[in-house]
Amino acid sequence: MAVNVGDLAPDFELKDQHGTPVKLSDFRGDKTVVLVFYPLAFSGVCTGELCAIRDELPTLGGDDVQVLAVSVDSVFALRAWADQEKYQFPLLSDFWPHGGVAQSYGVFDETKGLATRGTFIIDTEGVVRWKVENAIPDARDLDEYRKALAAL
Image (cartoon, rainbow, N blue to C red; front, side, top):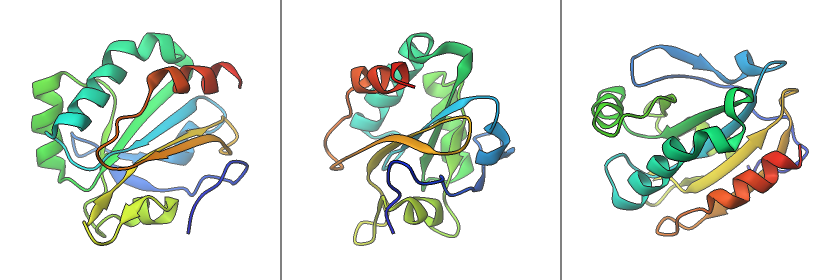
């Protein structure tokens, strides 16, 4: 079932790269969330996208925006990748039930067993205000994130 603009974002709780639980609804009333689903840690396009987010985070809304990046990788793989690439935002493990959160957002590829490149911008009330989904090999454009965030 796809999540569309104007829908209340499905709440979830996943562990980050440090094993700490992160709940989407904890950001309500406080921060806009950029929820980024990606296929796999350590892959070329995913590394490029998340490094661009890491480097451009201040221009994406600064302290008023929280990036949450989600994949089906284990917490342990995410920790190694975060340490290697110096990611400071949470990398969330949608490992079990396998891809459950990606499925709830409609961005899970059942045949490949991983998330597609879906991004959802969720306002402080928990409502999806913008979304984009790219095919697995196609990187997303950060300028589109900036435009969507500026429009909030």
